[in-house]
Length: 325
Image (cartoon, rainbow, N blue to C red; front, side, top):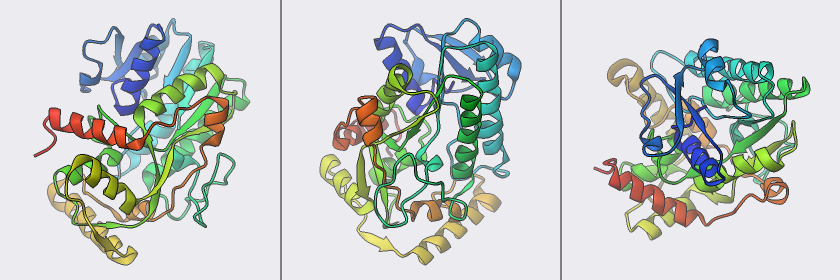
Protein backbone atom coordinates (compact mmCIF):
# COMPACT_ATOMS: atom_id res chain seq x y z
CA UNK A 1 0.00 0.00 0.00
CA UNK A 2 1.14 3.57 -0.59
CA UNK A 3 3.22 2.43 -3.56
CA UNK A 4 2.82 5.69 -5.47
CA UNK A 5 3.98 7.81 -2.54
CA UNK A 6 7.35 9.23 -1.60
CA UNK A 7 8.81 6.34 0.40
CA UNK A 8 6.54 3.74 -1.20
CA UNK A 9 7.69 4.37 -4.76
CA UNK A 10 11.29 3.90 -3.67
CA UNK A 11 10.36 0.64 -1.96
CA UNK A 12 8.75 -0.48 -5.23
CA UNK A 13 12.00 0.24 -7.07
CA UNK A 14 14.04 -1.68 -4.51
CA UNK A 15 11.76 -4.69 -4.83
CA UNK A 16 11.90 -4.60 -8.62
CA UNK A 17 15.70 -4.44 -8.46
CA UNK A 18 15.56 -7.63 -6.37
CA UNK A 19 13.48 -9.35 -9.04
CA UNK A 20 10.23 -9.26 -7.05
CA UNK A 21 6.88 -9.04 -8.81
CA UNK A 22 5.09 -6.01 -7.37
CA UNK A 23 1.45 -5.08 -7.08
CA UNK A 24 1.00 -1.46 -5.98
CA UNK A 25 -2.21 -0.49 -4.19
CA UNK A 26 -3.19 3.10 -4.98
CA UNK A 27 -6.18 5.32 -4.24
CA UNK A 28 -8.74 6.14 -6.89
CA UNK A 29 -7.56 9.31 -8.65
CA UNK A 30 -4.13 9.29 -6.96
CA UNK A 31 -1.21 10.72 -8.91
CA UNK A 32 0.83 7.70 -10.02
CA UNK A 33 3.64 9.58 -11.75
CA UNK A 34 6.12 7.85 -9.40
CA UNK A 35 5.14 4.51 -10.93
CA UNK A 36 5.09 5.58 -14.58
CA UNK A 37 7.04 3.22 -16.86
CA UNK A 38 7.65 0.72 -14.06
CA UNK A 39 6.70 -2.95 -14.61
CA UNK A 40 4.22 -3.10 -11.73
CA UNK A 41 0.61 -4.18 -11.48
CA UNK A 42 -1.65 -1.39 -10.26
CA UNK A 43 -4.56 -2.21 -7.96
CA UNK A 44 -6.93 0.67 -7.24
CA UNK A 45 -8.89 0.92 -4.04
CA UNK A 46 -9.10 2.34 -0.53
CA UNK A 47 -7.61 0.87 2.64
CA UNK A 48 -10.85 1.84 4.40
CA UNK A 49 -12.81 -0.45 2.04
CA UNK A 50 -12.08 -4.06 3.06
CA UNK A 51 -13.28 -5.56 -0.22
CA UNK A 52 -10.75 -3.59 -2.25
CA UNK A 53 -8.00 -4.49 0.22
CA UNK A 54 -8.95 -8.17 -0.07
CA UNK A 55 -8.89 -8.13 -3.85
CA UNK A 56 -5.57 -6.28 -4.00
CA UNK A 57 -3.89 -8.67 -1.56
CA UNK A 58 -5.11 -11.86 -3.22
CA UNK A 59 -2.20 -14.04 -4.31
CA UNK A 60 0.52 -12.00 -2.59
CA UNK A 61 3.21 -13.47 -0.34
CA UNK A 62 4.41 -10.27 1.34
CA UNK A 63 2.87 -6.94 2.31
CA UNK A 64 4.55 -3.57 2.72
CA UNK A 65 1.97 -1.32 4.36
CA UNK A 66 3.03 2.31 3.81
CA UNK A 67 -0.29 4.04 3.05
CA UNK A 68 -0.88 6.87 5.51
CA UNK A 69 -1.81 10.52 5.73
CA UNK A 70 1.29 12.58 6.56
CA UNK A 71 0.22 16.18 7.13
CA UNK A 72 0.26 18.92 9.74
CA UNK A 73 -3.26 20.12 8.86
CA UNK A 74 -6.34 18.82 7.06
CA UNK A 75 -9.38 20.80 5.91
CA UNK A 76 -12.30 20.01 8.18
CA UNK A 77 -10.29 18.48 11.00
CA UNK A 78 -8.01 15.59 11.86
CA UNK A 79 -10.42 12.64 11.86
CA UNK A 80 -9.42 11.39 8.36
CA UNK A 81 -5.86 10.99 9.67
CA UNK A 82 -7.01 8.69 12.46
CA UNK A 83 -9.33 6.75 10.14
CA UNK A 84 -6.57 6.07 7.62
CA UNK A 85 -3.54 5.72 9.88
CA UNK A 86 -5.22 3.67 12.61
CA UNK A 87 -8.45 2.06 11.39
CA UNK A 88 -7.07 1.61 7.86
CA UNK A 89 -4.01 -0.15 9.26
CA UNK A 90 -6.28 -2.47 11.25
CA UNK A 91 -8.21 -3.39 8.10
CA UNK A 92 -5.05 -4.08 6.09
CA UNK A 93 -3.40 -6.16 8.83
CA UNK A 94 -6.57 -8.16 9.46
CA UNK A 95 -6.74 -9.06 5.77
CA UNK A 96 -3.07 -10.07 5.79
CA UNK A 97 -3.84 -12.34 8.71
CA UNK A 98 -6.86 -13.83 6.93
CA UNK A 99 -4.84 -14.52 3.79
CA UNK A 100 -1.91 -15.91 5.81
CA UNK A 101 0.79 -13.74 4.23
CA UNK A 102 4.35 -14.86 4.92
CA UNK A 103 5.81 -11.49 5.93
CA UNK A 104 4.47 -8.00 6.60
CA UNK A 105 6.51 -4.82 6.95
CA UNK A 106 4.50 -2.15 8.73
CA UNK A 107 5.70 1.40 8.19
CA UNK A 108 5.31 3.41 11.36
CA UNK A 109 7.35 6.56 12.03
CA UNK A 110 9.82 7.94 14.53
CA UNK A 111 6.67 9.74 15.73
CA UNK A 112 5.80 6.37 17.24
CA UNK A 113 9.09 6.22 19.16
CA UNK A 114 9.10 9.57 20.97
CA UNK A 115 11.57 12.41 21.42
CA UNK A 116 14.71 13.02 23.43
CA UNK A 117 14.17 14.96 26.66
CA UNK A 118 17.88 15.46 27.36
CA UNK A 119 19.43 15.82 23.86
CA UNK A 120 20.74 12.24 23.91
CA UNK A 121 19.65 10.02 20.95
CA UNK A 122 16.92 7.57 21.88
CA UNK A 123 16.42 4.05 20.54
CA UNK A 124 13.57 1.62 19.87
CA UNK A 125 13.10 0.88 23.59
CA UNK A 126 12.33 4.47 24.57
CA UNK A 127 8.88 4.96 26.16
CA UNK A 128 6.54 7.04 24.02
CA UNK A 129 6.35 10.56 25.47
CA UNK A 130 4.44 12.64 22.92
CA UNK A 131 1.18 12.74 24.90
CA UNK A 132 1.31 16.51 25.39
CA UNK A 133 3.53 17.66 22.53
CA UNK A 134 2.21 15.42 19.77
CA UNK A 135 -0.13 16.57 17.00
CA UNK A 136 -2.74 14.43 15.22
CA UNK A 137 -0.20 12.85 12.87
CA UNK A 138 2.11 11.86 15.72
CA UNK A 139 -0.72 10.36 17.78
CA UNK A 140 -2.24 8.55 14.81
CA UNK A 141 1.07 6.91 13.94
CA UNK A 142 1.55 5.84 17.55
CA UNK A 143 -1.91 4.26 17.69
CA UNK A 144 -1.40 2.66 14.27
CA UNK A 145 1.82 1.05 15.44
CA UNK A 146 0.02 -0.31 18.48
CA UNK A 147 -2.35 -2.08 16.10
CA UNK A 148 0.63 -3.70 14.36
CA UNK A 149 2.05 -4.81 17.71
CA UNK A 150 -1.27 -6.44 18.66
CA UNK A 151 -1.31 -8.41 15.41
CA UNK A 152 2.31 -9.48 15.94
CA UNK A 153 1.41 -10.81 19.40
CA UNK A 154 -1.45 -12.69 17.76
CA UNK A 155 0.98 -14.49 15.45
CA UNK A 156 1.06 -12.28 12.36
CA UNK A 157 4.66 -12.13 11.01
CA UNK A 158 4.95 -8.34 11.25
CA UNK A 159 8.19 -6.36 11.32
CA UNK A 160 7.83 -2.65 12.16
CA UNK A 161 10.02 0.08 10.68
CA UNK A 162 10.18 3.66 11.93
CA UNK A 163 11.56 6.00 9.26
CA UNK A 164 13.14 9.23 10.47
CA UNK A 165 13.03 12.37 8.27
CA UNK A 166 13.61 11.17 4.68
CA UNK A 167 14.87 13.36 1.85
CA UNK A 168 15.27 12.65 -1.84
CA UNK A 169 13.55 12.60 -5.22
CA UNK A 170 9.89 11.85 -6.02
CA UNK A 171 8.37 13.73 -3.08
CA UNK A 172 5.19 14.45 -5.03
CA UNK A 173 3.21 15.81 -2.03
CA UNK A 174 5.50 17.36 -1.07
CA UNK A 175 5.68 15.93 2.44
CA UNK A 176 6.33 18.28 5.37
CA UNK A 177 9.88 16.91 5.29
CA UNK A 178 10.39 17.79 1.64
CA UNK A 179 9.03 21.28 2.29
CA UNK A 180 12.25 21.98 4.21
CA UNK A 181 14.11 21.95 0.91
CA UNK A 182 11.38 23.30 -1.35
CA UNK A 183 10.71 26.32 0.86
CA UNK A 184 14.43 27.08 0.89
CA UNK A 185 14.56 26.83 -2.91
CA UNK A 186 11.56 29.16 -3.21
CA UNK A 187 12.89 31.48 -0.46
CA UNK A 188 9.79 31.03 1.68
CA UNK A 189 11.64 30.64 4.99
CA UNK A 190 12.33 34.03 6.59
CA UNK A 191 13.13 32.44 9.96
CA UNK A 192 13.16 29.07 11.71
CA UNK A 193 12.76 27.43 15.09
CA UNK A 194 15.99 25.85 16.26
CA UNK A 195 15.71 22.20 17.17
CA UNK A 196 17.10 18.86 16.06
CA UNK A 197 15.99 15.94 13.92
CA UNK A 198 17.34 12.83 12.22
CA UNK A 199 17.85 13.16 8.46
CA UNK A 200 18.11 10.15 6.16
CA UNK A 201 18.27 9.41 2.44
CA UNK A 202 14.88 8.10 1.26
CA UNK A 203 16.68 5.47 -0.82
CA UNK A 204 18.26 4.10 2.35
CA UNK A 205 14.81 4.05 3.97
CA UNK A 206 13.50 2.02 1.03
CA UNK A 207 16.40 -0.41 1.31
CA UNK A 208 15.63 -0.65 5.02
CA UNK A 209 12.10 -1.80 4.25
CA UNK A 210 13.31 -4.62 2.04
CA UNK A 211 16.03 -5.57 4.52
CA UNK A 212 13.41 -5.66 7.28
CA UNK A 213 11.38 -8.14 5.23
CA UNK A 214 14.42 -10.36 4.72
CA UNK A 215 16.28 -10.03 8.03
CA UNK A 216 13.99 -8.33 10.53
CA UNK A 217 12.76 -10.14 13.63
CA UNK A 218 9.00 -10.56 13.90
CA UNK A 219 7.45 -8.16 16.40
CA UNK A 220 10.55 -5.96 16.53
CA UNK A 221 10.83 -2.39 15.33
CA UNK A 222 13.74 -0.71 13.59
CA UNK A 223 14.49 3.02 13.36
CA UNK A 224 15.47 3.83 9.77
CA UNK A 225 17.56 6.96 10.13
CA UNK A 226 21.06 8.33 9.82
CA UNK A 227 22.27 11.80 10.79
CA UNK A 228 21.23 13.68 13.92
CA UNK A 229 21.41 17.35 13.04
CA UNK A 230 20.28 20.79 14.18
CA UNK A 231 17.85 22.70 11.97
CA UNK A 232 20.43 25.47 11.56
CA UNK A 233 23.06 22.94 10.48
CA UNK A 234 20.65 21.43 7.97
CA UNK A 235 19.92 24.82 6.41
CA UNK A 236 23.67 25.48 6.24
CA UNK A 237 24.10 22.24 4.27
CA UNK A 238 21.25 23.22 1.93
CA UNK A 239 22.90 26.58 1.32
CA UNK A 240 26.27 24.99 0.69
CA UNK A 241 25.28 22.14 -1.63
CA UNK A 242 22.50 23.95 -3.50
CA UNK A 243 23.99 27.42 -3.66
CA UNK A 244 20.86 29.15 -2.33
CA UNK A 245 20.34 31.72 0.40
CA UNK A 246 19.00 30.15 3.58
CA UNK A 247 17.46 31.75 6.67
CA UNK A 248 19.67 32.84 9.54
CA UNK A 249 17.05 34.42 11.80
CA UNK A 250 15.83 32.22 14.64
CA UNK A 251 12.39 32.34 16.22
CA UNK A 252 11.92 31.59 19.90
CA UNK A 253 9.35 28.99 20.85
CA UNK A 254 6.59 31.40 21.91
CA UNK A 255 6.98 33.47 18.76
CA UNK A 256 6.83 30.30 16.65
CA UNK A 257 3.62 29.24 18.45
CA UNK A 258 2.04 32.62 17.68
CA UNK A 259 2.99 32.31 14.02
CA UNK A 260 1.56 28.78 13.96
CA UNK A 261 -1.75 29.93 15.47
CA UNK A 262 -2.11 32.71 12.90
CA UNK A 263 -1.20 30.44 9.99
CA UNK A 264 -3.66 27.76 11.13
CA UNK A 265 -6.42 30.35 11.59
CA UNK A 266 -5.87 31.70 8.07
CA UNK A 267 -5.98 28.16 6.66
CA UNK A 268 -9.16 27.25 8.57
CA UNK A 269 -11.12 30.40 7.77
CA UNK A 270 -9.73 31.90 4.58
CA UNK A 271 -7.48 29.86 2.28
CA UNK A 272 -8.57 26.31 3.20
CA UNK A 273 -5.11 25.27 2.08
CA UNK A 274 -2.33 23.69 4.17
CA UNK A 275 -0.52 26.30 6.29
CA UNK A 276 3.25 26.34 6.61
CA UNK A 277 2.90 25.89 10.38
CA UNK A 278 0.40 25.05 13.11
CA UNK A 279 0.74 25.11 16.91
CA UNK A 280 0.85 21.31 16.90
CA UNK A 281 3.57 21.24 14.27
CA UNK A 282 5.56 23.80 16.26
CA UNK A 283 5.32 21.67 19.42
CA UNK A 284 6.60 18.65 17.52
CA UNK A 285 9.30 20.64 15.73
CA UNK A 286 10.57 22.01 19.04
CA UNK A 287 11.10 18.46 20.30
CA UNK A 288 14.64 17.12 19.90
CA UNK A 289 14.07 14.12 17.63
CA UNK A 290 17.48 12.51 17.68
CA UNK A 291 17.75 8.75 17.34
CA UNK A 292 20.17 5.88 17.78
CA UNK A 293 19.85 3.88 14.54
CA UNK A 294 22.45 1.25 15.40
CA UNK A 295 19.92 -1.59 15.71
CA UNK A 296 18.88 -1.26 12.05
CA UNK A 297 22.50 -0.82 10.95
CA UNK A 298 23.70 -3.91 12.84
CA UNK A 299 20.75 -6.27 12.37
CA UNK A 300 19.52 -5.25 8.92
CA UNK A 301 22.58 -3.69 7.31
CA UNK A 302 20.83 -0.32 6.85
CA UNK A 303 23.01 1.90 4.60
CA UNK A 304 24.13 5.29 5.90
CA UNK A 305 24.48 7.44 2.77
CA UNK A 306 25.57 11.09 2.95
CA UNK A 307 22.55 13.31 3.44
CA UNK A 308 24.06 15.89 1.08
CA UNK A 309 23.46 13.58 -1.88
CA UNK A 310 19.81 13.14 -0.94
CA UNK A 311 19.34 16.92 -0.68
CA UNK A 312 20.79 17.43 -4.15
CA UNK A 313 18.54 14.72 -5.63
CA UNK A 314 15.51 16.26 -3.94
CA UNK A 315 16.30 19.73 -5.28
CA UNK A 316 17.00 18.42 -8.78
CA UNK A 317 13.67 16.58 -8.80
CA UNK A 318 11.71 19.59 -7.51
CA UNK A 319 13.29 21.79 -10.18
CA UNK A 320 12.71 19.29 -12.99
CA UNK A 321 9.05 18.87 -12.07
CA UNK A 322 8.01 22.50 -11.76
CA UNK A 323 7.92 22.87 -7.98
CA UNK A 324 10.47 25.69 -7.88
CA UNK A 325 8.98 29.07 -8.80
